[in-house]
Image 1: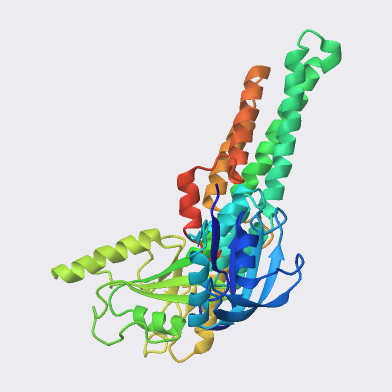
Image 2: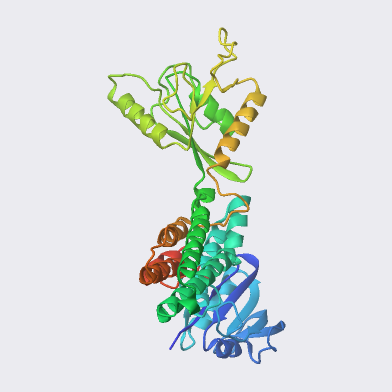
Length: 426
């Protein structure tokens, strides 16, 4: 028998209000045990909460949500208590002493919603991202997934696959009745439909994954020693993130500074100056700088020699110093410590370059897992075989891949990893 679970589903105490959620087959019994007669469904009423000995624990609002039309698909009771730590601890202790009632595991409420068909896996993943969202772009993408945008699109694709599969089955059932199924014309139409659907799915999967909005853009500042890299990092981060001195080689290792601009997270990396050296520690820093350059989403090159990557933004640094006022024609931009406008112009260029690496606001917010499954479905559908049996198998593979997005083939290991990201009361 499924346990009845409880947990605080609001903010961590102390707070003005603490919402204690109870879900499961004995949720109504647990609610009556503490609060006495419960109010009508979905009506809030004040009740006195008492423990088994009759001692008053708190005065709280009680709300009943009969299953299955609830967040978890089960009977659910909410107790809106005062949010002090002692109050919450006393109510939870009273609940824990009830038979078949236990504290919820992280994400267990949402996992039950998934098990009872209230949400699917793509919506649960969106909800997990929504709980962790720190920027506006993350919030918008996560909310779209949590509210079913991905699920609806996948459902439309699956409906098309089902129709194509039915047409293939009709061909196989009536392969000796050309006047019924249309012969070669029908075969060509089905193959065209498969290829078109595969191209549309492939286009959706080719967009940057939504994880980009969380992981951000890696912006690496590199160049020779004493080129102004650390100064530029501090100017872009608007804080003293790196030590700056006129001594070449001050920075010996990568220095990171996280920045959010325009709702986009950036990770700025200052690197050791690229030079030949016999100093073992400095050599390690140079090696790490080279690795950072290779893996950068965007490279800001501060050297006077040509940058090591053709896609780098080649900056003319320290242009406020004597003898460096003239900006060479091959530079992307000049930056000056005494000119905030030059740093603002650099940020504009960084944002423009980064836009291509981020999912568009109107793009389907697919995670890397979704993109992989979409790729498998598209690969099965594009350039379809000419044999009806092989066409049916290709459609089956596409159907399995697409169903995996919404969790039809979700494994316990994958679900454990997902719901472990949730808080206890979610």
